[in-house]
Amino acid sequence: MVRIRRGGTREALEWAHTRAGAIGLRSEVVNMVIYDERTNSAVYKRRKLDAIKSITVHRIKDRKDYFRWAGDLAYAFADTSKYAAGSYTGGKMPYHFFIDQWGNVHQMLSLDCIGPGARGINKQSVHIAVSGDFRKEHPTTAQLHSLKLLCVKLQLVLGVKEVRGHTEKGFSGRMQAAVGKQCPGQHLNMDALRTQITLALVLKRANDAQGLHLYAH
Image 1: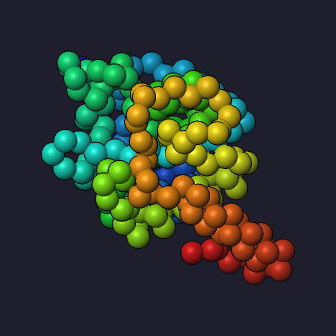
Image 2: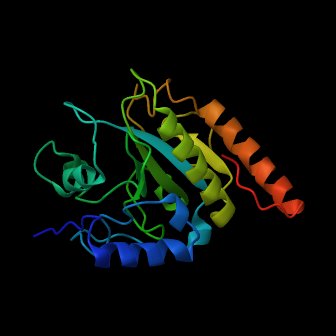
């Protein structure tokens, strides 16, 4: 019996906030660790945080509608029946973070867990899934804002340098993706995202150097 921890209980949120606070992510993440290695029967391989070298961005949308809630995503990957999402991952959650259509950020896995998000680069990557099909639609302003801030925070905390789309070419690692797959899709412009992240980091470092301690929004 697989048990899924929803993000609304006091005990779950207190534990998650403590865990996230330890790596400096508390202010960016809500409903943290809804689905993790403590509540799922699947066994995750572990890594040291200094093994993380990249951030990989994904799109996620079911056939009928958005994955509107992080809990929906958790249940989908817990389902290992034929053709269900979890049947392709062995019941494991592939994403460390999920950004819903309102721009809320949910932590789905602890960062020391290796999630099966992109074969060949999982050990070195943090996987972020954004709700929507960006081959056909644009992400919301709130989603882009949250994605940028989360990437900035991960780069500052973990020293990560590389931000990639799942099926982008020309990046390090031995990523294997289905032929013709577009993820996250052309309407989530990864070049523009990387430019925004760089500008935010430059501004923050300049502010810190002047003792202003402002954060780039």
